[in-house]
Image (cartoon, rainbow, N blue to C red; front, top):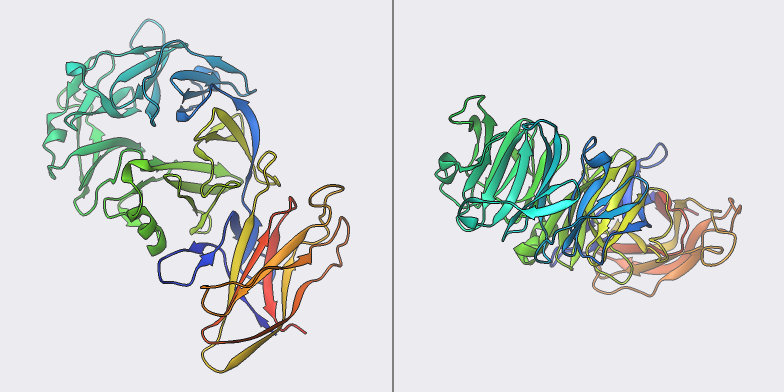
Length: 464
């Protein structure tokens, strides 16, 4: 009897055997293996705002009554905790992604919640439920916008120069940023704790507020990095502790005190083969899993789980990618925003389907063999059984096993075994007489599409 090495993530690098995990996550396992395989969170329709696509999201507790502010199509909407949607007045040009941030303006008699929206061609200001164009020097467009401690930072579209707006003041160019240590084009500005990170095409620089009128912001010693820049304006995101971005070298970086690579070679290759302008990133938190989501156009969605440091692809039915592309938290819910429609989804860690759509979950294993001939008399899974539904699809759930003896170049058709109807907890999931194999070994791929819970703790070859 031998335990089979399972793959918890995926590797689709050219000329390497494919490790084809799909729509699964991993969690610490108290039994046989260190990690168990579970199905990814699923989608449940929450509400709809406009016709889509959803182009940007901002949400911060205490602002706009805790509602999320979204741009769907060419309008802005407020989405309340109970799902109520309020349309705002004022058009937002274009259909591409927008950059958004918000802050409370305390410079007047009363405090006012503000969200600024950078479309690339314009800068817009949302107060209350009204969107209006904001005057910006030379009527230039803005590609990136951020707020921090009452200050606003913008990246001008036509010259890639940074601008600052102090509380109660007007927009002023930051000459130091336009002539920073590395004279590359400024692409985005992003907050990280009390720092403002300026991300250029070939460098990163951390700046902090000085507390002085001039200059209001200055570089932080030791926070200038000339070895990597930002690939494109939408390829950056953050959580409470770090900044994540796709670098100019096509790798994905995590930046807390310094940038370090977290992508694998397969993902870097996929990024290199994607139009940089169609790459976007987001963050998602659910059940102590903090996910970094990288959407590669309409080709793939790769998800990095900070709990396990594993990358794996997620996809929706009939699509190569996961249909949401933006995320936020509201009222204890994790919300996901559709990239084509105006649909807003709730993410459910224990869900079984994406609305009415099935979710195909896939994982792989490998039995290495250096020489000679091996025999697969049986393959068995330590998997949750007896969880069939009462009626319909999933009442008699099946899991399929495909095998490859040529390094994943070709696969045998799947052989299906039952996971047990409801209450059949003594079900054994085992495949017999799978034949012989030679070097480099036996690759195995399991697949489950029935809407039942998935938990795999281990796999075995020739158990009996």
